[in-house]
Length: 184
Length: 424
Image (tube, rainbow over all chains, first blue to last red; front, side):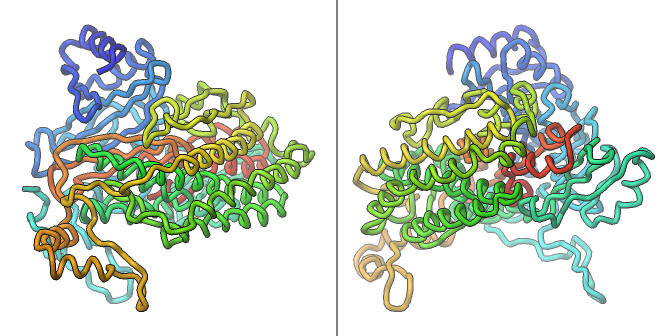
């Protein structure tokens, strides 16, 4: 880990000892786990005190079947500091059935569309988002298609007289490991 | 206006107009407007000819590419991602493959890296040419459209020679590139880069002092550096706001640190600045391509590990493209291991260690990032794409508010959005 990033992580641990984990370095990338309710404050600190000017990416992951249900959803924030030339990933895990967390649009306005995308695909609710609605899927779409329990091949066919079987008996994809996909 | 439902079918019209002030008028620009570079719908609120508000509506081209990659092997993912930003297919392939390679802990051989850089930089030129051609046409420089597409066709011809396809190549694969360069390819690339600067000068002579071009671009679509960073805007748009941020310099990949090139910037923060920056970038790309072909390393183009390297060695025979006779002789007659590897890799694919990576590269439109998560299987668990068009498009309302409706066209053109990448 680069020295400047070490300092940033140390400063963050000092400021939020309860809510930020020890930095973890894997594949040359540094990640921190952040407590759900404090993500916006941590982002504010990183932007104002540690010169992370850019929220490069906000991405959702559904770990259904590979992680305990208390950590089913991951929201990953990829921050970039132009002045320090380092990157940092913040990870917030969300439990199944309680998919809400504070929005960071007030800190990084670029998150507006990215949070809408995560809401659209995973059904994750960002509290305080100014305009949280679907962005890529049609507004009347049902379900959140990137969830691992979303049935594949379940799109309604809009022809006269077409019969759509209920979701639980639609054809499921055949994989070597079964579905929804626990990967051996 | 922003809290209202806006839906793709357009049946939201009653709700949209109710919220308008008495003095203002709401019009739809798009989704089938010729200057939206695809299917982008802008709901404009106008006071006379002045834009009061602008709400982009996207999603018309959503094809679920990210979701599709989750049910295909790691290698098959390349053929999906290359179809996102269809004007810059090599960048999608490269970022995806770099992410997979980082998870696998491998690095492509030097020759493959050099071929990747060469193709990417040629791709940057062809992508910027489409921007110049369509952007010119939208502002009335119709001849620019013909010239731009003519030159782009030359580059696509080079791509066809090297990869077999004009677009959507799936040529860059995890571990390297799928095939070595064909005979004479480098000579043809050299002929192009010798010829192209002259044409670039022509374009500059055509536009840079053209009074109409200057009037339509200067002072239009202002986006200062602080706003650009807050909105996550990267690439030529950020550099035209005076921030010399280029991932090829600051966080080099694929051996970019070996090549000499400048990062052009401009202080104007307007559409004209973006025009100047993109033209200068084409010249820098030519510089890089020249250095690559002058110093093209030899050797393999795919990692040696038979458990990762795609086994097929294609060759053009009398009945089309297929496995070469030598290769068939080897797997059917000589080497049992080769046959097993072929069978396993082609049917099942390779496994990738558990983990997540985020790999950003500098695409013609800005930071193209791939967040790839593996749970150790032969398929990606999640592939999320940070497409620069998607992020940069958020800046349109900020650029056009308070301006004239005609300037919306110039502002959208200066973003250079590719809806295939925006909607994915």
